Length: 292
Image 1 (cartoon, rainbow, N blue to C red):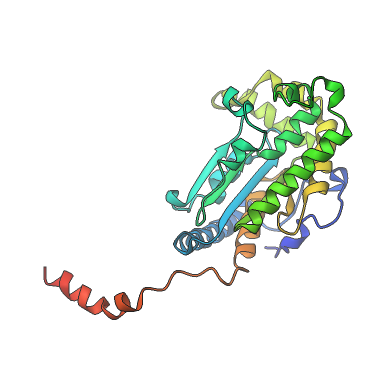
Image 2: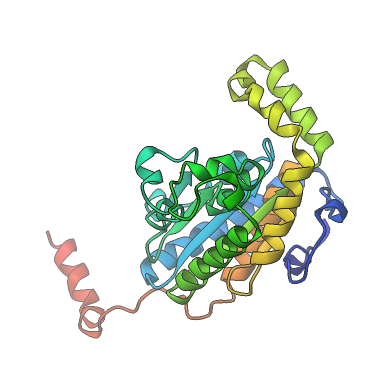
């Protein structure tokens, strides 16, 4: 099986998504890829236990991608060996009236993981510069004082919003949140196959919406917005990774490897030491329990 370099997927300079491959060959079969994924996620699970006990860092995993890119199954398979007390998943949908009564980042800020825990954002604060950029009319629903019409949603508006997102991520990174941002790079042809699968398999029908086909017609516009967002916001403290997503097992393995290899670099993450007095009395505590 091919060894991967996680830096091959990190965005460190401007990219073109049109030229970024949605396929990556690990030079082995699916069974071996899944076997290797199981090994990696078990190590991640153990590391999560240590981070929970350590209680100094939080981890935020942001997952974005076109419809059918595999976000849900990515979360299910990569984090399967995590202790449920140390991880929480948020799937952000259309903002509620309560959420719209606050600024657009509010609902994401209050969902951030505590120190010692992992938070997974299935769709993220980037929806506010992706869907809203393709459909700027949605911005009017935010009731922003400076925006009274579509004409007010201009380049300056988006520049300011990207600056706000960068500031938000810098703030939480400075305060102990380790940020990963994954773009699941799916080809248009593979999306077509997955949409047809949803229609052909009765048990998958519930996942299909006619709106999926309307959004598919805007593929190039969405891709351009993703590219701009990634290039503007991939920073050393909050990097983007473009993950070839046409093959789900490969994509899951790459994401798991990126998480594990990056977190292992934090040499200060260790299980806390017992108090000296408690440590010195361990044998006494054992004796008390054995003599019950």
